[in-house]
Amino acid sequence: MFYFAIDILGTIAFAISGVVVAMEKKLDLFGVFIIAFVTAVGGGTLRDILIGSTPVVWLTTSVYLFTILGAVIFAVLFIDYLKYLRKSLFLFDTIGIGLYTMVGIEKGISADLIPMMCVALGTITASFGGVIRDILCNEIPVIFRKEIYATACILGGAGYFVLKRLPIEPTYAYIAAIVMIIIIRLFAVRYHISLPNIYRNGNR
Image (tube, rainbow, N blue to C red; front, top):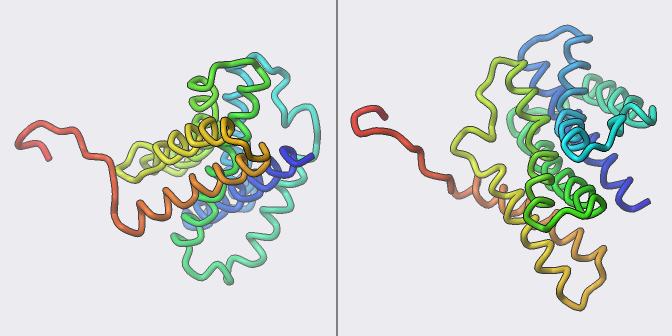
Protein backbone atom coordinates (compact mmCIF):
# COMPACT_ATOMS: atom_id res chain seq x y z
CA MET A 1 0.00 0.00 0.00
CA PHE A 2 2.86 2.37 0.83
CA TYR A 3 4.57 1.85 -2.53
CA PHE A 4 1.25 2.23 -4.36
CA ALA A 5 0.66 5.56 -2.57
CA ILE A 6 4.10 6.76 -3.67
CA ASP A 7 3.29 5.73 -7.24
CA ILE A 8 0.03 7.70 -7.18
CA LEU A 9 1.74 10.77 -5.71
CA GLY A 10 4.35 10.61 -8.46
CA THR A 11 1.59 10.31 -11.06
CA ILE A 12 -0.10 13.43 -9.69
CA ALA A 13 3.14 15.41 -9.57
CA PHE A 14 4.14 14.56 -13.13
CA ALA A 15 0.61 15.09 -14.48
CA ILE A 16 0.56 18.60 -13.00
CA SER A 17 3.98 19.37 -14.45
CA GLY A 18 2.63 18.26 -17.83
CA VAL A 19 -0.39 20.56 -17.48
CA VAL A 20 1.87 23.52 -16.69
CA VAL A 21 3.99 22.95 -19.81
CA ALA A 22 0.94 22.36 -22.02
CA MET A 23 -0.78 25.52 -20.82
CA GLU A 24 2.39 27.51 -21.42
CA LYS A 25 2.22 26.25 -25.00
CA LYS A 26 -1.48 27.28 -25.17
CA LEU A 27 -2.72 23.81 -26.11
CA ASP A 28 -6.42 23.00 -26.07
CA LEU A 29 -7.96 20.91 -23.31
CA PHE A 30 -7.40 17.62 -25.13
CA GLY A 31 -3.77 18.56 -25.76
CA VAL A 32 -3.34 19.45 -22.09
CA PHE A 33 -4.67 16.04 -21.04
CA ILE A 34 -2.47 14.15 -23.52
CA ILE A 35 0.68 15.97 -22.37
CA ALA A 36 -0.22 15.36 -18.73
CA PHE A 37 -0.90 11.69 -19.50
CA VAL A 38 2.36 10.96 -21.33
CA THR A 39 4.33 12.85 -18.68
CA ALA A 40 2.77 10.77 -15.93
CA VAL A 41 2.96 7.31 -17.54
CA GLY A 42 5.67 7.57 -20.21
CA GLY A 43 8.59 6.55 -18.01
CA GLY A 44 6.63 3.78 -16.30
CA THR A 45 5.46 2.42 -19.64
CA LEU A 46 9.02 2.16 -20.93
CA ARG A 47 10.10 0.59 -17.64
CA ASP A 48 7.41 -2.11 -17.80
CA ILE A 49 8.21 -2.91 -21.42
CA LEU A 50 11.92 -3.26 -20.61
CA ILE A 51 11.31 -5.76 -17.81
CA GLY A 52 8.57 -7.60 -19.69
CA SER A 53 5.81 -6.59 -17.29
CA THR A 54 2.89 -6.44 -19.70
CA PRO A 55 0.23 -5.26 -20.05
CA VAL A 56 1.82 -2.08 -18.69
CA VAL A 57 0.53 -1.01 -15.31
CA TRP A 58 -1.84 1.78 -16.40
CA LEU A 59 -3.65 -0.63 -18.73
CA THR A 60 -4.48 -3.03 -15.92
CA THR A 61 -6.23 -0.58 -13.60
CA SER A 62 -8.25 2.57 -14.20
CA VAL A 63 -6.93 4.31 -11.09
CA TYR A 64 -4.06 5.90 -13.03
CA LEU A 65 -6.34 7.31 -15.71
CA PHE A 66 -8.70 8.81 -13.14
CA THR A 67 -5.79 10.11 -11.05
CA ILE A 68 -4.35 11.90 -14.07
CA LEU A 69 -7.77 13.23 -15.03
CA GLY A 70 -8.28 14.56 -11.51
CA ALA A 71 -4.82 16.16 -11.49
CA VAL A 72 -5.53 17.82 -14.85
CA ILE A 73 -8.85 19.24 -13.65
CA PHE A 74 -7.24 20.49 -10.44
CA ALA A 75 -4.30 22.11 -12.24
CA VAL A 76 -6.48 23.74 -14.90
CA LEU A 77 -8.90 25.16 -12.31
CA PHE A 78 -6.16 26.46 -10.05
CA ILE A 79 -3.56 27.44 -12.64
CA ASP A 80 -3.85 31.08 -11.53
CA TYR A 81 -2.64 30.04 -8.09
CA LEU A 82 0.43 28.47 -9.65
CA LYS A 83 1.65 32.03 -10.09
CA TYR A 84 5.09 31.32 -11.41
CA LEU A 85 4.68 28.64 -14.06
CA ARG A 86 8.34 27.82 -14.43
CA LYS A 87 8.76 27.53 -10.67
CA SER A 88 5.66 25.37 -10.45
CA LEU A 89 6.93 23.13 -13.24
CA PHE A 90 10.29 22.80 -11.53
CA LEU A 91 8.71 21.98 -8.16
CA PHE A 92 6.32 19.29 -9.41
CA ASP A 93 8.93 17.86 -11.77
CA THR A 94 11.43 17.59 -8.91
CA ILE A 95 8.92 15.90 -6.61
CA GLY A 96 7.97 13.59 -9.47
CA ILE A 97 11.49 12.40 -10.18
CA GLY A 98 12.09 11.68 -6.50
CA LEU A 99 8.96 9.58 -6.20
CA TYR A 100 9.21 7.83 -9.57
CA THR A 101 12.88 6.93 -9.19
CA MET A 102 12.05 4.85 -6.15
CA VAL A 103 8.98 3.30 -7.80
CA GLY A 104 11.23 2.16 -10.66
CA ILE A 105 13.86 0.83 -8.28
CA GLU A 106 11.25 -1.23 -6.43
CA LYS A 107 10.09 -2.65 -9.76
CA GLY A 108 13.68 -3.60 -10.54
CA ILE A 109 14.09 -5.28 -7.16
CA SER A 110 10.86 -7.21 -7.74
CA ALA A 111 12.28 -8.35 -11.10
CA ASP A 112 15.45 -9.59 -9.33
CA LEU A 113 17.71 -7.11 -11.09
CA ILE A 114 21.10 -6.17 -9.67
CA PRO A 115 21.29 -2.79 -7.85
CA MET A 116 22.97 -1.01 -10.79
CA MET A 117 20.17 -2.06 -13.14
CA CYS A 118 17.56 -1.13 -10.54
CA VAL A 119 19.00 2.40 -10.38
CA ALA A 120 19.00 2.58 -14.18
CA LEU A 121 15.37 1.44 -14.24
CA GLY A 122 14.46 4.03 -11.61
CA THR A 123 16.16 6.77 -13.62
CA ILE A 124 14.29 5.74 -16.77
CA THR A 125 11.00 5.72 -14.86
CA ALA A 126 11.65 9.20 -13.49
CA SER A 127 13.09 10.81 -16.62
CA PHE A 128 11.41 9.56 -19.76
CA GLY A 129 7.91 10.88 -19.14
CA GLY A 130 9.49 14.33 -19.06
CA VAL A 131 11.50 13.54 -22.19
CA ILE A 132 8.32 12.65 -24.10
CA ARG A 133 6.55 15.73 -22.73
CA ASP A 134 9.32 18.08 -23.80
CA ILE A 135 9.68 16.53 -27.27
CA LEU A 136 5.94 16.81 -27.91
CA CYS A 137 6.04 20.43 -26.74
CA ASN A 138 9.04 21.21 -28.98
CA GLU A 139 11.49 21.68 -26.12
CA ILE A 140 14.95 20.21 -25.55
CA PRO A 141 14.33 17.64 -22.77
CA VAL A 142 15.58 18.72 -19.37
CA ILE A 143 17.57 15.49 -19.04
CA PHE A 144 19.73 16.55 -22.02
CA ARG A 145 20.47 20.03 -20.73
CA LYS A 146 23.09 21.12 -18.22
CA GLU A 147 20.72 20.81 -15.25
CA ILE A 148 21.31 18.07 -12.68
CA TYR A 149 18.35 15.76 -13.37
CA ALA A 150 19.15 12.14 -14.12
CA THR A 151 22.27 12.52 -11.97
CA ALA A 152 20.06 13.25 -8.95
CA CYS A 153 18.10 10.06 -9.65
CA ILE A 154 21.29 8.02 -9.90
CA LEU A 155 22.81 9.44 -6.71
CA GLY A 156 19.57 9.05 -4.74
CA GLY A 157 19.06 5.52 -6.05
CA ALA A 158 22.60 4.54 -5.14
CA GLY A 159 22.08 6.12 -1.73
CA TYR A 160 19.02 3.92 -1.22
CA PHE A 161 21.03 0.73 -1.60
CA VAL A 162 23.62 2.08 0.85
CA LEU A 163 20.90 2.94 3.37
CA LYS A 164 19.36 -0.53 2.98
CA ARG A 165 22.55 -2.01 4.42
CA LEU A 166 22.19 0.06 7.59
CA PRO A 167 20.13 -1.13 10.58
CA ILE A 168 17.11 1.07 9.80
CA GLU A 169 13.57 0.38 8.67
CA PRO A 170 13.35 -0.17 4.88
CA THR A 171 10.51 2.37 4.69
CA TYR A 172 12.76 5.03 6.23
CA ALA A 173 15.50 4.23 3.72
CA TYR A 174 12.95 4.54 0.92
CA ILE A 175 11.69 7.92 2.11
CA ALA A 176 15.22 9.17 2.77
CA ALA A 177 16.22 8.31 -0.81
CA ILE A 178 13.24 10.26 -2.19
CA VAL A 179 14.18 13.27 -0.06
CA MET A 180 17.82 12.90 -1.14
CA ILE A 181 16.90 13.08 -4.83
CA ILE A 182 14.71 16.14 -4.30
CA ILE A 183 17.35 17.93 -2.21
CA ILE A 184 20.14 17.18 -4.70
CA ARG A 185 18.13 18.69 -7.54
CA LEU A 186 17.00 21.70 -5.50
CA PHE A 187 20.54 22.31 -4.28
CA ALA A 188 22.00 21.97 -7.78
CA VAL A 189 19.56 24.45 -9.28
CA ARG A 190 19.83 26.88 -6.36
CA TYR A 191 23.62 27.02 -6.59
CA HIS A 192 23.87 26.59 -10.38
CA ILE A 193 25.69 23.27 -10.19
CA SER A 194 25.65 21.46 -13.51
CA LEU A 195 27.49 18.93 -15.60
CA PRO A 196 30.01 20.37 -18.08
CA ASN A 197 29.08 20.83 -21.72
CA ILE A 198 31.07 18.81 -24.23
CA TYR A 199 32.12 20.89 -27.21
CA ARG A 200 35.03 21.45 -29.56
CA ASN A 201 37.15 24.58 -29.29
CA GLY A 202 35.56 27.41 -31.20
CA ASN A 203 32.12 25.71 -31.29
CA ARG A 204 30.62 26.73 -27.97
